Image 1 (cartoon, helix red, strand yellow):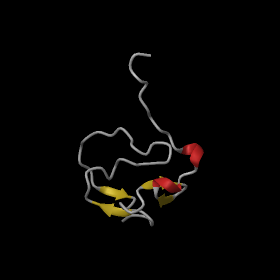
Image 2 (cartoon, one colour):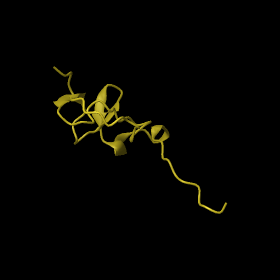
Image 3 (cartoon, rainbow, N blue to C red):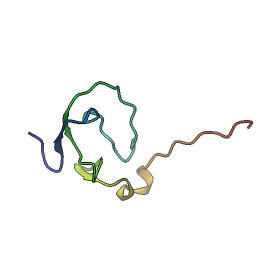
Image 4 (cartoon, rainbow, N blue to C red):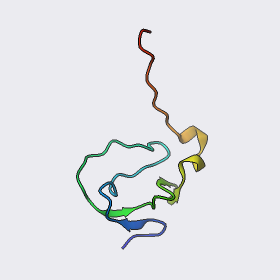
Length: 70
């Protein structure tokens, strides 16, 4: 049984927790259903499930590539 606001999910990525600091975490490809935030609010932050746009600005990490040739 899952603790609200998380819900039980059969998705293979249920064990892969998305957060404001790591919105696209590196996870293995094994399928392990379990408790996860619902797709409508996929980010786990301060014991709640929220949308990425609701993350505090200083906690969102954006990964960019350095332009080639520099």
